[in-house]
Structures are given as structure tokens and as C-alpha cells.
Image 1 (tube, rainbow, N blue to C red):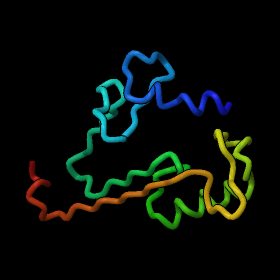
Image 2: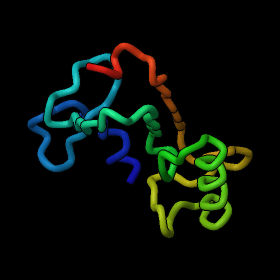
Image 3: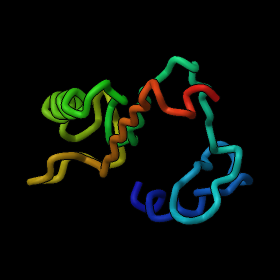
Image 4: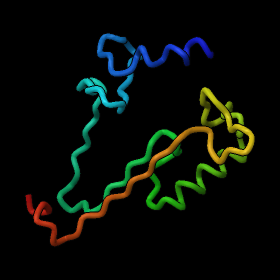
Length: 114
């Protein structure tokens, strides 16, 4: 696995990389092939995004952390229900970096009408 992990960056942001290619936010342009867009209903006032270090984009950060914590306690090596290329290292709180963003737009936001 280590040789594959060492070379995985060769597949990042390469539209010609076949089924193993992937998009990566690293300062380079991300090809359209790797960008997903999701239309929001005009009544949507909140959006939550979470990186792959979480199991889900839960409604609240505490919930996302609880889900992740329970999963890590059940499978610290990440070989069961949520397999990964690395497990939980001694003294670490997670197996991966993670980002959680929740954006709320007010009902009187001028963009809400557009």
C-alpha cells in the first residue's frame, strides 16, 4: 500500500488519470470532471460541508464528532465498516485531518431573492 500512497498525488487533478483520478484542493485548478454541484432549493438557509475525515456532514459539529468518535472506538484500525489507508495512531484523536463548515444565510439576505 505504501508505494501506492506515495504516488497518489500523480492522480490528483488529472482528467486523464482514468477511474483512479480525483480532485484535490491544493492550489492548482480542479478539472470540471472532479467538481460536483448540488442545486439548493430557494428556501435553503443552511448548508453543511464536511471533509472525508468525517463520516457525514451532520447537522451540528458535535454530532459529527460523536459519530466519528464512536466509529474510531469500534474500529481504530479502520479495517471494518469504514476502511481507510491508515488507522488511528497512538495519541491521535482521528485517523485523518478533517474540516467541517456550516453556513447559515438569513432570510433577509439580498441573495435569498436571487
